[in-house]
Length: 106
Length: 124
Image (cartoon, rainbow over all chains, first blue to last red; front, top):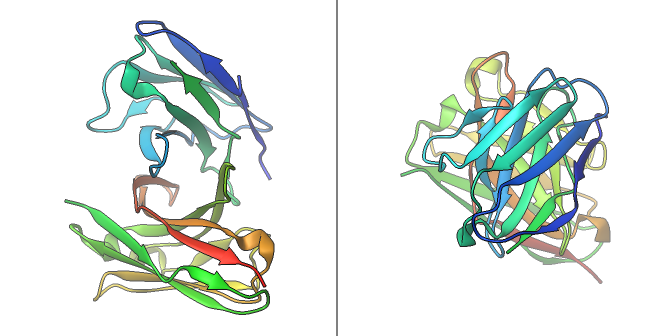
């Protein structure tokens, strides 16, 4: 199985800050990587797929980058509504696997 | 508007069975895969399994933790997917989400819409 490791596990930031979350895979995912946002008490929501493609309707302050085994999710200017836990997920190989999540506090 | 509504969760004793349903609307159901993802209380997301869309033969994949105990099926005419869970144990306790699973290339599925989940509690 491909292990996905996110860092940090939690982060505290202020409104307007640039925030970066890292996701490392134990082997190449060939860029078949997605990012999801889960607000408290809600279902996850797709932000990014294929490592860097922004899902329709997602604010442009979110961006994804990386390739192979190392990927990042960046929020260019943190907003209060971005309080959430963020998960990366590889869909290159079965079983598909998620990172453990990064909780963003504001 | 795309909607996914899970149902069928509840309290069940260890060793028993339960069938979850995922009722979809707002899109052509047969054109998409359906993946089930679960989340144990206070924990992260765990991929449970996938049933592919019709052009990929509606075949299934499962996590090792549920393989042989869980099955999936779908009724494209009614827009419903099913997760049949047998031999349940306490480690299956979780909120179960169904997702609309989209593929652009090579049957690589990611999850572009999620239901609100249905809670399964396995306890004696």
